[in-house]
Length: 239
Image 1 (cartoon, rainbow, N blue to C red):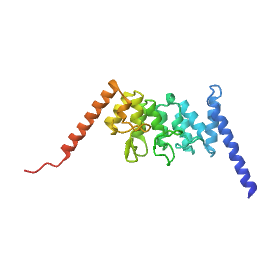
Image 2: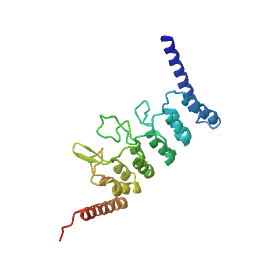
Image 3: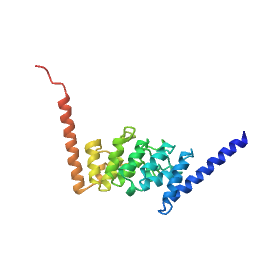
Image 4: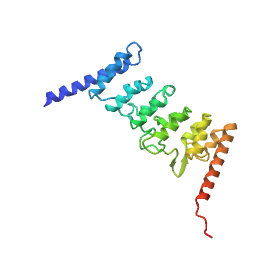
């Protein structure tokens, strides 16, 4: 009946407020222990888990708490109210392999970015995928982990209007992130001839000097290895 429904709604709202307050207490060293116990208890009671406790547990590096939140309904593909994925906005300097692994194992999609209306699936003026954020920061370790551990295959280029764009490679080259750029070329098939989204110029235009020379050499080796592998795999004529 109406009274029972209202009582249920009031109870859920009260739990949500408790969770928000407890999650806020995780930031303070003096209140953290009690706040953590409160978050564990309230999350297990079936309250809707939004971005605040997930973000706080991640920033603390508290894997046990993070996994607990995911088990009790925390959405690894949740977004902030402005549409930005929670994973994309975690402080990049505090994000380590264990925290990212917890998100990925819970089903996080590191390619999750703008909505389906965007031609660029990696980012637009308002929203960035976690993968693009990692690349822009030069976190080769996180990019590699996300690609290897994701629940779905991840393509690192996209085609729009008949042209191929490589936003991660462009970001790595523009930021001078050598190891990431060379890995994207050698291991993931990105090319210096792929385009930069904003300018339409080839990715090679985003680098210069030693970095450009290393990228060109890496691409030449990759092409040669690919051609050699194809030649070896071709059936040989019988004598």
